[in-house]
Length: 626
Image (cartoon, rainbow, N blue to C red):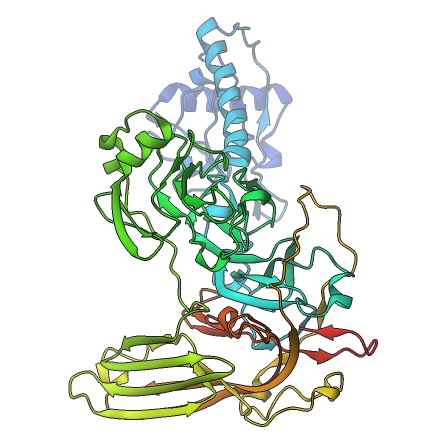
């Protein structure tokens, strides 16, 4: 026998043939020795009457004992196993339990150095794999798309927000992962009644609403009233999502994170002494390529050089809000506005002189040299991608006539406003076929104003063009021609009319702007608007706001009033200067109070609309809600 660990398998025998333990051991040893040493041939004893059975070919199923391994009962190829025992009645029972018998000692072999290194390396690989899959490979949730089941579906909701007037364009921004997108608004407090203004100095600001429910995500209070906001232009903190640029009524620039509501920077160009009184001429900053090399697009802005001049050119870092270089004063101009930039990086602007207005052009390289006093590497500038700019929609207060033309689905909607509202204005709107010029729908009236329409497209009804539905959503303000009784301005009045879609909305709790201001992260000086000399009169006006839905396909057209609300408006008028009129809610701020967007990434579009009005609060006779 070869050295190794022998396997003992008892050979079944009749009890009458066993004469002694020694003979049994001898027979077993002989049988086992034949199996191990035979390699391919072996003799197996028949358990019945101890007669030798015919030899069987093992076909290589025997494993050499030299390697210290055992063989299984598959060795017998379906024959009776030698481990089967026979009872007194001649019935055999399986006995497959292997019995090990120690025949020799195993020599101790020390692990070689290479094997030790491989062993340690394998342990390290296992540990590093665990660390890799737990902490390294899992990426941030910000760049991942949530599963459809995780997304919060947008509900039809309606909610009131007291003591604020929402104003300006609705900005749609990314929300928390798995949630809907958020809505960013500017707001202002009461501008006409001092008893409210004294109770809250920081009554203006920015507010974020959760798109799926209308809940307030965050709000930042400001002293000055925000004038313009754009959340699509620059990524100041380089987190992959655009941040919001805010310009207030006096021209101060600020940048805010749309998700957290934290201020990223405040521009230092603000100077109370040089505030331009004609703040309607303030332009939103022009976005220019990254000229300071910090990875963020920069800004070109016009600010005031003196109280009556608005002609100073400055460049501002988009990342930190700091000035780039010095400044340049366009001395020939009283004020500069209407900034534009073409694809060749030529900056166009209107220069207002004493008796005329001219359009002028300077290259970006020329402006950079005037401000920074060194040349600009235009090769790097031209490599940068397309630069989006702020879009302004809506009328200016001094506009006497304006026309808005909107096209979609082969139809054209033309809205023309004339005069100045609310005193003397009129509007005409018509829908026509672009090919034939046929008028499909029109409306006109006095004391009426048509706002900026939005396009509507349903393209998921099939591949056939006839199944695609197009449309417009447009909002109208119509003032009552009856003179209201100003003595009843504090009486509560119903502010809504029957709405055919009212049963689809879920009424949400009212949110009220807190009376006490939180400690501001940055202290800014309080600015109070100064009134022109004259006698002022405050009037209350009634108006009706109507939202019209115009939908059509290639064969049919349908027009529906989706909502209708009554609005109470107060206007402070200067009897000596008729153009000096301040109203709240202001028509100019409601111009873009409609938007259509997919807030929950489900492929469908949601219509978001807001309006502001004065109502009497339940708490006391002197409170008002906007």
